Length: 451
Image (cartoon, rainbow, N blue to C red; front, side, top):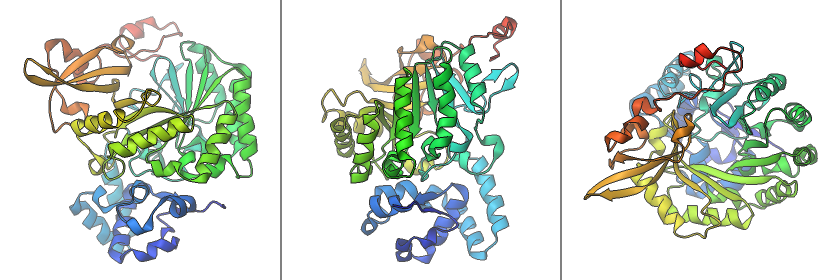
């Protein structure tokens, strides 16, 4: 299949769009002015059931929906669309974007490291053992998820964008931080890049083997949105060869796949791509947030995890959708989320119970909702950090007062005095600090992230 992208500029070329009302199309254009919209012919033709619009989960996953904006804002933007006033539409959209927490969990303020007094804008180092790298050429996707917590990467605001061009700086940083064992190459979607560009970023790492690096992870939605990337694209064989080279160099290669709904795994193209990736020695781990409108169905999750195990994949995470963008459209309460997760878990064997969830990626770290407990006749949430800026907090259980309306950790309050340190400013009392290797120990003592 030849790739064809659809965006807000040309999506009316999609044949099936002609079945939608003019009002729906205007509203979609209005929402797309705020949130980036992109899909492709594989998604449109293979994954969406156009007889089930608008309820179809992949349609909800990839097309702008009117409910993603408050009605008064939607009406204003729709008026601008009707009038053809593109300048006014852009101004209104930009104001709305900046009010929607475009980079949640301190991604820019807390996660971007400094190296010899220079911020490394293409890197994030939130957890001691893991560095994220955002290759400049991979900051787009084959299609955009409507829930994407990185939507700010795609709206053309440079100060909100994370992108790195130089692998040499990444290698120097890894050399200076031997505690880092895992490198996550992410985006956007690095699998949108042609293989020659992927090689440009990865090959120097294989050659130099910097620091204590052991694992290279690649975050991608290509298995869902364009499996041809691994099967019939002109440079697919070269990409698979590069994967083999990663293993031959002594690294573990983990493909972090995002399967949001089981329908994304049910095509012949997806199955073929999975087998080819596995043949290189790579491991595929699967993750997704749980989302109202799309996958708030315990039976579907159970079947999806079973199918992942059947394919030889590893169920990895069920996330709570982050507090950014159109979160209210997708929001489930923590109570609902936990009950869906638990019902799904009861339907699978231990091989699928590798999945961790529900997990919130907060400023302090990944907080797992372990359960809902009753103590002395009162209900509490049992929580723990499965990853944290302060590694001393990892795997420590703490409790929050039960709140049936809570959707995020900011809606929770500590249950006991001993739990307060987990809630102070929604981050640990001890800030995460990278080991300082530039002789500026006084800055570490002062609480500055110096490296």
